[in-house]
Every structure is written in structure tokens, then in C-alpha cells.
Length: 387
Image (cartoon, rainbow, N blue to C red; front, side, top):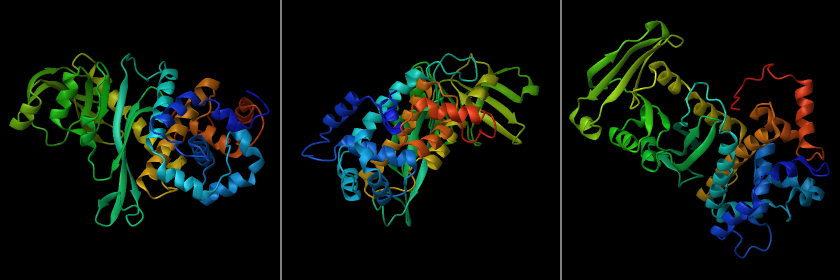
């Protein structure tokens, strides 16, 4: 990369600008806009994400202090908090949602050969949701409870590379299981789900689409055992059975057979029961598949801690969704950067380095190679590592 460019510009060179402008045209983002285009808005918000800015005034102050470098960063207009606030409130958030999907597609191709941690050729997804609390008086559209506002971030995570493939932002009162209705099942893939997604009608729809699921069963599950397979109890397995549901409504919603596996978790002194519609895979592999679901919990924890989605720059629904989708775009963009440059540092470390060197005019590889040379990997570098 050109050493005369700032590190911020070198990172933004990875953006597929043709696709970005296509997204802008699709929703008429630059209609009657003379200054401060959608690209300017995206770059300002990207700067805020990469450098951990806390407010619009904070963004304005930092960028104006570097006014002589803005043009070289790709920002063609003067930055003001009012202009940025209006852009976040009025420009359709779907521009950035569609663009995030473009980046996600690129990242998934790069991480296609990432090891899963087990011998399995199929794609494995984990689905879950996290709640982001909001002040009801400032965000009245995000009604959750009587005195509380919230939104939910529903995510389908590809466990090869921890890349989010499907994201839906809803009001906090929307239950997670409803998102299974919007999911387009991928035949032959595995979907790892927690107990909140127990709905036998929707699970049967996954089964009919030739997709496989592994879900943790509720304690009040009622079923009839048909056959049993011997298991090695030394591995933690307690039983591997073929069953049918016995409650009339559940049996009507899921009329086919299910596989029930019980596993004793010695570390947490807990017995877990799993249901799946896959009958040929080894029972211990099924339990390992569910264990790999922890990656989506780490993903939620990571983005809440290291991206600006808890302190919002605007209070309208459009502004909140715009900020979340740009935050996700930056997450995926840094994952693409890590893969294309062959960086060994964790995603957290990459963001930390970028945050303090964003205006430097040095080759981006040099910034990371200096770190890896003076700070060997593996020393207290395990917190929230996703890549």
C-alpha cells in the first residue's frame, strides 16, 4: 500500500466502493445532497468506531483538529455534528445494512477454509439474540417494558471465522423464536440453537428443508423412547436415544423421530439434554457442536465492549440502526483486513493498534509487524479472541 496514505485510508481501500454506491443509489441516499455525501457519513462513522469516539461533538472535535488530513482520508466535506446528526436521522439505514451484507459475503469467502475444530464439512451456524438496553424517555420507539426501552440484535453466526451472516434488529419485546420464520434454511447445514428456540413447528420446517439442528431441550420435555445406542460414559455421555414426542400438540407439530442425547458436563456439574434430527453423526460430536455455540456469546460480548453500540450518537430508530450496521461493517472489514494481510494478532489487538495510529502515514503492515516483533503473541492475549 502507498506509504503516503494514512493508515485509515489504507484500511478504507478494502471497501468495495462500486457496491457501496450501488447501495446508495438503491435507496436514493444522495438525493438533493450537495455536501456531505453518504460516503462521507460512512467514513466519519467508521472513524468513530475505530477510535472509540463517545459523541457527535467528540467526532467533530477530533476530525476538525485534523482538518488538513480529511481530504486524504476520503472525507470531502467539512464535518459538523449537526450535519452528521441529520445524516444519521434521515438517510435510510438500509443503505448500510445492504453494504454490510456485501462485506459479509467477502469475509465468508475468505474464511471458507477456516478450521472448525472438528472433522465436519458442512457449514455450522449458531443463532442467538442479545438485548441492548435503552432509556425509554430518549428512545420511546424502543418500548420493552413499562419503564424500560431496549432493542434486540438477532444474529446468525457462521462458526467458520465467526462471521455474522444474518442480522435483524427488532424491538426488545420480540421473542427470538420469531426470527426462525425469516430464516431461509440452507440444506445440509447445521443450526445450533438454545432452549429459547424450542418450537417444534418451526424446527420441523428446518427438518423439511433438509437442514440439521442441534438444540438444547427443556427440562419438561415429554417423549417416548424407541431405540437406544450404547455410549461410553467416561466421555460424559449418558444416553443416545431415538424418541418421539408424546404431547399431542408437539407430536402434531413434529410428527417425525428425534434423537435425544444426554451429556454430563463435569466442569459445571450440569446435565444437558440435546435434541437433533441428525442420526448418523457421532453423539460426542453433537455435544461438541453445541459447545462451539459459545462463539456467538463471545461475538455479542466483543461488539458490546469494543464497538460503539451502547452509547448512541442519535435517538431516532434510523440513527440507531445506521450506527449498528456501520459498527458491524467495521467489524467485518477488520476481519477482512486480518485475513488479507495475514495478520496473526487478534481482532481486539488490531483495533487497539488502529485506534492510536489511524492518522499515521506508514505502511499498514509495518504498524502490525512492529507490534508482533516486540510483543510475541501468546502472552496474556486471550481475552475475547474471535479470530
